[in-house]
Image 1 (cartoon, rainbow, N blue to C red):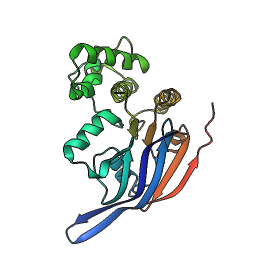
Image 2: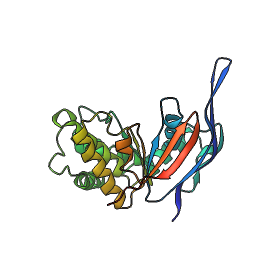
Image 3: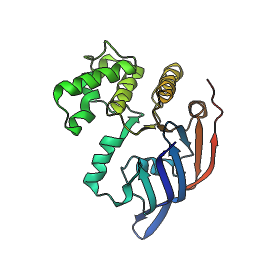
Image 4: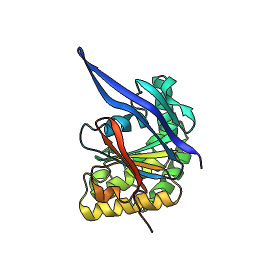
Length: 231
């Protein structure tokens, strides 16, 4: 099985005035195609910095990051934007939907940036909404949907480009416990279809849905283990 994510000795140093802060201190790990990985750690542990790097929203100070075989570290801003749209799907705690736009058009957004024609965008968006259990809600605006349904729209948007990896940042943070479980069961189902998922969470019960847990502390990985999740 091939590695879709490969980090080697990643360091990220932030300069604030005459002070330097090393947020990541030589982080290395790989994620194989089809894995479901939870990244955990307290505030300030480095997990969010790592997620920003994985999402091509930032670049490492040193080290090597390969995304689906491509060396991200050498890319300029435009190349990073392009690889984000082609290789990554994002799911956020706050859903990040356009309030005045129907659900199906929210799902189509990555395809607009990819330059697909309207009809092809619509067909792919409808298929993604069906995949997350939202058939019949295509024309609903976010305000007409529950929190769980809004997150499903966000997941459909993340899926619609057939990305190499879905990155989920605290995807259940704004949801009640029953809805959180529904969303995590959806992620599990998608993962069983072969979709690679990397999720940041601070909740152990949410992390337990993943196959593997990577824990950060003070800019380093302190554990990397299988969770023991079974069918």
